[in-house]
Image (cartoon, rainbow, N blue to C red; front, side):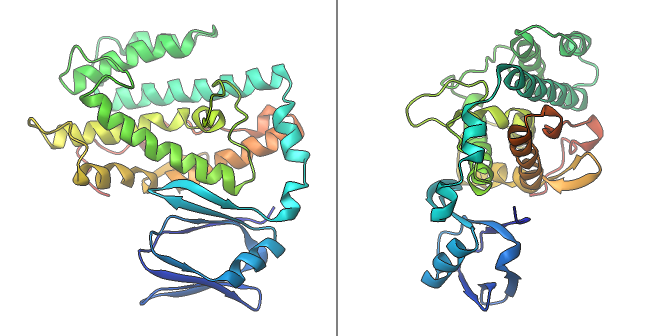
Length: 311
């Protein structure tokens, strides 16, 4: 598969092709890249001018075009020949139970480790930190729930909301988290579509109508990135309106996708880290070996400081 996934997010731009080159133009910028090096093009710009010839040429080169609204994919142009390539689809729908278990265990291990890293950064002296460290070593199926219970207790103390409980419809702090998770979900979906994975075939979350369980599965290790961003907002914006999902908050929280984190020997933006992780997941499915799937796992030194207001 070709290497580059191109993200187009400039407010006003023109995207075309000529002589086998992808052409990107704005009033102040001009760039080109060989189409043969492009795996997919993700368009989040709300006013991009997309030339018809690009759609045709992209299909010839096997390039997917992912069109987004508010960062969430709403349309997918997939080359006809990709729909006849059943290797990846068959790999997704026939995952052996043993492989599925290993992939999910690696996902949850990374998520819990990232929760611990965040808590160590935000509340280094908290009395429940040691219990969280011990819970991370658990191997039973309830590990995620056990760690989550402790994790949210620590987070609630950081934001001075001792009675806080994480719930999708819980209001207040939950509203901010829900919006941030929606941005994360959109980012994961963009990369899944770009890399040819069907998000309706998950490894743990159950499929429901108009649901994308694989995206919910693979976003798990990155949830603490959203949690940090939301905690920063609440700490930096005290007052009765601190839980309002307003324009300023939306702009703030969407910035987490371009924060830099360590991914093994690389220093990547979170959106790039998501892409690398999904590439590994894709290979793990095709080759039936979990070793190729490497979920992002932070350490406390790679988490931005609480008073970092960049982005």
